[in-house]
Length: 172
Image (cartoon, rainbow, N blue to C red; front, top):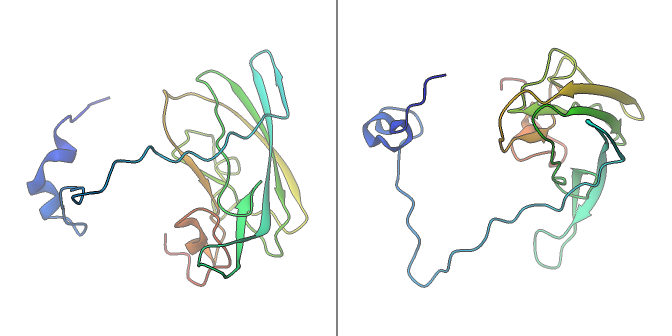
């Protein structure tokens, strides 16, 4: 593997991309805050080198705007989800449960998992009321990855986690 230690800091590279590059500045008077990490999801079972989880896509309700309730979707929570901790070499068994009123999928963004079904793209739907069991061995170094929905035609739900009914195409 080739590592490019200066790639992400080379302003000239970002200036020529569609993203643009703007150095992060902290406004005066604003104190740094620790990274808010969602609570840990307790495994259903740990047996030697195997760890078992159940992840449920569910409807919820969250207060995003002051004094108003917003219908939301999440994984084992009303909004977004919880943190799973797995280790390199560990065998991970996951029961995927869809309690949403629409089909969804469970895409392991950034995890090196076998495809196409375990990967959870739009080709691996889980229909309302359905459960699927997947398993994989963690074959990568420590990383921060995320789980999100990837169903077609509403792949837009994946932009900020499983965040609610989406409206959009499958162009991602």
